[in-house]
Length: 257
Image (cartoon, rainbow, N blue to C red):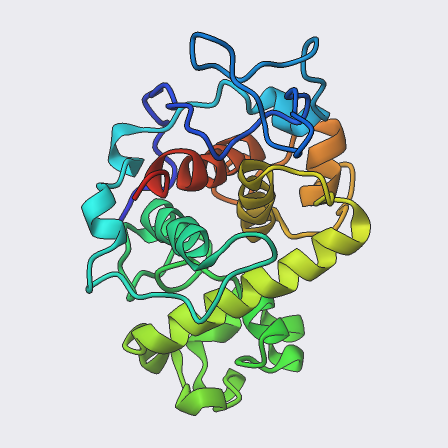
């Protein structure tokens, strides 16, 4: 089981072509322009919202780095489709880094505060996806997942053990969760139409751990994180860290595969 509470050893992120700054100069055809040194030609300093600005220098631990060969290997399943402007490859890269960070890509992990599976999904997320009965969650919180009676039987998932051994169901559930979060974030300006691909992936990663909504000042969700910064899950994983994971998925892992 991955130790999700271990402080990461900083690793400098590599800049690749897909994370084009929003203030890049574009030619008459709308294509971004590079200077003679191969760097993007930009106008002035890019102004980012508080969360992405705070995460700009976020490093990743060595353990969170993933070989490109694993991304495209047969043992790493493809998602059913893309998400918004993220194509299938970028979506796969995002899911790959989230699974690695959450559980070490192990499907049978029970987290320290009740999250379950490869993506360490919460009981609340499983209620939203239809796998767990809401009344059991309201009554017992995360502990409800240990009760067979709490599971709805969707996709033949009747208890926690059947969730652990159903890798394909977990993959599809995570994809559906990302789609749901994309819809919510697109509606509340957590994701903007002019965001580059790294920001889009980063916001989806943040939403996975703290939710796609505003949340509260004490427990901010992803949209509040974007505009004010701050916010972490029950295990101390921060919005900054997960935004960095999303950026890494597009900027490094899936770049020039």
